[in-house]
Image (cartoon, rainbow, N blue to C red; front, side):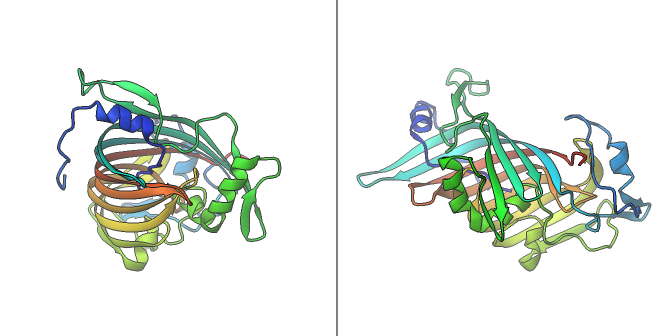
Length: 330
């Protein structure tokens, strides 16, 4: 759960510097183990897929967040991430230190495919939308995302596991090989964070019902945050409803956390200090994965590629992440 930033900033700074700066926001039971999630409904499905509902273990006493079903070996995950930025960007070079307002909406769409020991990543869309000075609330000017290290392309990046290491698939090209070199040590973390692998910790077998509250801290944080994290998050189960046809429990969430060197598929590593002022998480009732996030946050981020320049951003970020999670039939 985080906002990803990347140090290719010239266009963003030029656009943002023309903006009227605003003040930063202040702390603003099924036993069907051979069957797995095979389908989901449409993007706006109001009801859970019928076959997936059969896998839900729910009674009047509450629901079990299952972790006993075999995790699918084949997956397609279509992720749409939208981030509304209102903050300041700090950039330091050998000759100067610059501070610029950063306000706009960043949208990225990526497709992830996993077939056993092969993973394919395709960045389908990445853009940064700067609001117009004449219409701050309007759509504004859409730019090619200047905060994205990898430009959208129809050419995917394919990785394959050899022994214990993830490497570029043969014939994938120089860029994929360079990415694989940096990402291989943290590739398993990437899989978990992007719902291509189950989270290492999940709920106990106790049934949960609407109104139940949990505090996630210490060794329990991998339930929600892959990698090394510190902090404390409070969850309250609000309801049961599907995300893109997939049965979920919807939790409200507040709290604070820190993570260091959080990887992304574009080769960026981010240090993040995050306060979640309010938000909701859609957690699968069938597998240990997070399928949707809607968060109002205050963040301090330091981000960059290995061996490259880093940037720091502070401010308010509204984060929306939606994952269309499908396990195609073999």
